[in-house]
Image (cartoon, rainbow, N blue to C red; front, side, top):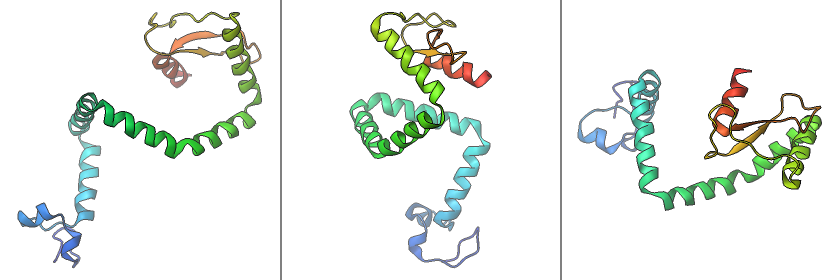
Length: 152
């Protein structure tokens, strides 16, 4: 069969069955290329996809948990390798993070609400402005901590 977009002669298995029924002879590769470009250029399509995924995750929490665990196991070694490399490349930062974590565990540092929103609901994280002072930390929720680093 001849793909009407790339004009290549391909086997019938190279076409989506639904496309063959509609006599829309575009091969799988051309369909995928079009879909990626369409999503990239159309914010409404991306927003609808994100909303559809949120609804699905809300309706299927047990499947989401199973998938998340599977992904966690699948990528664990890569994350661990990255963490080891980060610790080796940034000993001062890692040392400050470890000292601050120990201070929290020992009760020397007390977690505070987020400096921006005052929230406790999200994960509260420590932020070091100066890694040479490991016990001088600022407290942010994960969202505002990420935004703070993005603005630096």
